Image 1 (cartoon, rainbow, N blue to C red):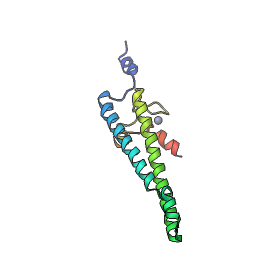
Image 2 (image 1 turned 180 degrees about the horizontal axis):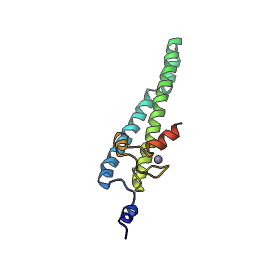
Image 3 (image 1 turned 60 degrees about the horizontal axis):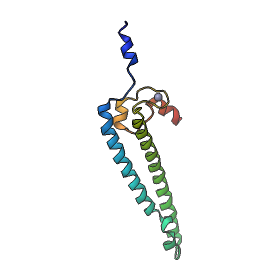
Length: 130
Ligand SMILES: [Zn+2]
């Protein structure tokens, strides 16, 4: 029997002893992101518009517009991070953490250490961003 058979049959899996601390990190990260999102919503001047609008000077108006644009941009970014973190947690649940969604190859551990919510390898990520 050729030696290589065993190696080939070994299921592609991220080391189990690393998955559990990563899952813990992702869960606390998700909580932090959701809290941040709530805080940002409170900061949005449009949410407090009734208070400001009564005596709005043009300056206050511009500031309000700017504040809203800024908080929306931050909120969008947080939303993307929340989605990505949830996705990574789902990958853990189904036992596919660390495996690229697109090509099915192992994601570089260096990449996962720097970006634990990654669900795509560097190559496929670059392809999607094109
Ligand atoms: Zn890939």
